[in-house]
Length: 268
Image (cartoon, rainbow, N blue to C red; front, side, top):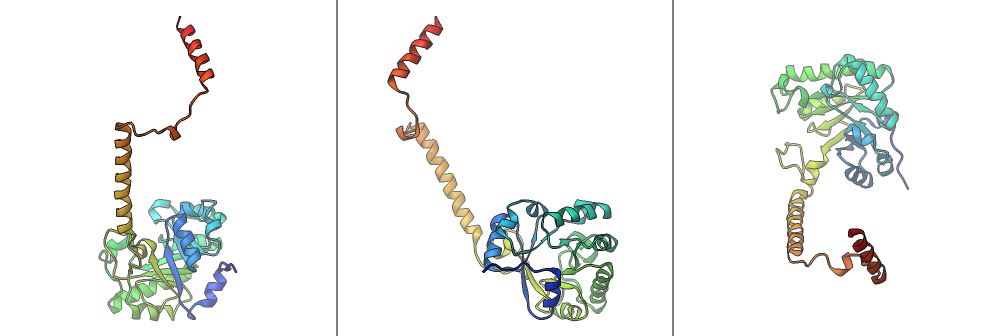
């Protein structure tokens, strides 16, 4: 029996009752795997929701396209972009731009997910790639940001690399649906990147990531197989082992004779 895709009302009703699962997926194959695995929510590149095949492989995934604010532009640009995403089948959109920009979209009934804590595009303000909210004052800044997102009309927020005690306390005091990336189980959904789960990330592994498979090793093996196959092709061409009779088309002898006579006549 197929699952029903959750609505905003469904997610609000779930808040505080159980943990949901969320992934960042980058392509149709990952989206299909998330659908079949029973993942609840996905963050996706905007171009993926625009692919007409997306909803064929991911009919029940609550899908949230997102882009850094500097890739989209002004508040007006965000409104136009969010309408485009919504028409294509998005269930919400991610926005790390200003509260005013979020309000513009929320005023048009677009479900918006904001971002608090470690915000990669704004990390210079909080000291780089490190946890945010480890002091009472910085924790209050996160709480204030959540309240401002509430006031702007956001539906939820990603809360990233924040102490679990802070995230849990805030989650109990906000109507926002909180997506935890390294912020513990006091929030409403646990969020990881598919590349970390699959082991395709060859760079820094965040503390909150967990590797379940080693796709990188498999990709390395496949690359060696590619090189070997290409090398064998080169060797076959050089030795005239390729093409074989089964790889070519031959002409009827009578037609060939007629063709050669025509060619010889044309040359004269």
